[in-house]
Length: 166
Image 1 (cartoon, helix red, strand yellow):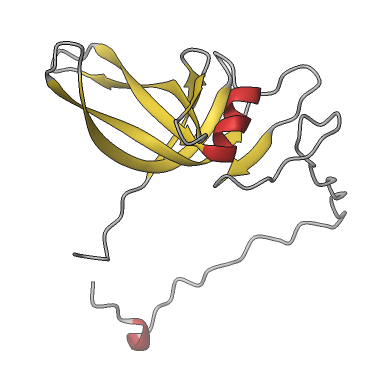
Image 2 (cartoon, rainbow, N blue to C red):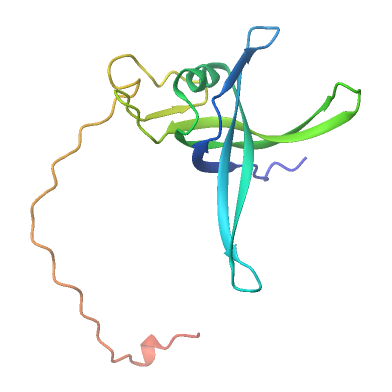
């Protein structure tokens, strides 16, 4: 099996609906939600065309608990994870396949009243209590006051030692 492959997905967009949470038979928390992305392009006639795409996200364990607690429809999130395809049998016994994003990291990008953004990932407990919504934001450093340096000057006389092959 090749070990030098990459399966990585990064999305930034808003939740299309509130997350749905459930527990597996062995007590593992699973959270599912959908993130919508869109892209635009011009067709052959020069008309602008918008295309929307729904991405199913699945999150497990502690990160699932965090998503269930803090995410709501319309909240902007950063999701990082990998693609996974799984099969299941529908109610008529037909085998179906679905591709979803198994999230490993989540960052809340939009703020609610009384809550800050947060960086949550990998099921770790990067969150705490308090009024910050579970995220301890570093204090902004004051900008140093200094004079801007003059722009560099470039000499246009190139000699033979500066001969470039392209």
